[in-house]
Length: 231
Image 1 (cartoon, rainbow, N blue to C red):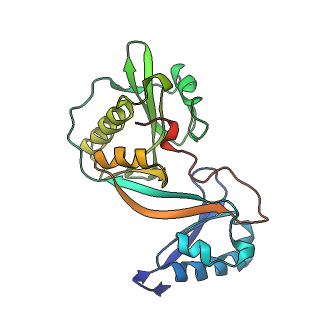
Image 2 (cartoon, rainbow, N blue to C red):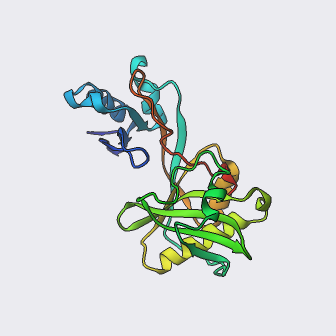
Image 3 (cartoon, one colour):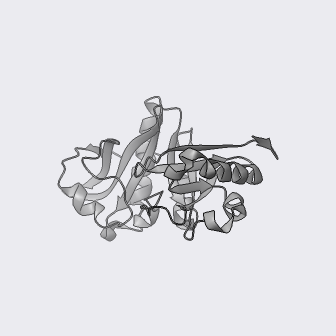
């Protein structure tokens, strides 16, 4: 469909976060809303449990289709190294590193854990035997690494540990040939937004996500909030 400033599209596909059928839309809000209603009414639409659409498209949906609870988030991405010195304390971690589960349990919102097949690699910022911060790298697109499950130990927060780890890993991934690096972040996390802007990330598409009323409840669509202490 084409309307407003350009083409609009909705796509129903298994969510990368929980595998259930999710409808995602981009483009003109009015057109996306119309396409979403049509997709949900189609014979195959009964398997769609949730929506990720522009705010205005969600608000324009008929009340019976409008999620009661929304998570407002955005994709962020960068193509350019931020140029800081590579931090030697940032190291690749084995998925069976016993420090990882202990650190990840400090955040209730992480969705990737050791042993998850979606994780390409784990990284941590290490000081002696202490794991001060960690993150996972996965790929929603084969060529683009995606940063997730970023957690900083409670005792190390406020010291720039998350910035050191995320900046170093991002620069290494770009230096290794990745055309871009992405992440997802809740839009109300101003501190994390400032951090990632300082690392060269820019906000891309913004979404409001939630479960369609009356359909099976699912975990949060984003599943990770940098409130886990990435600053």
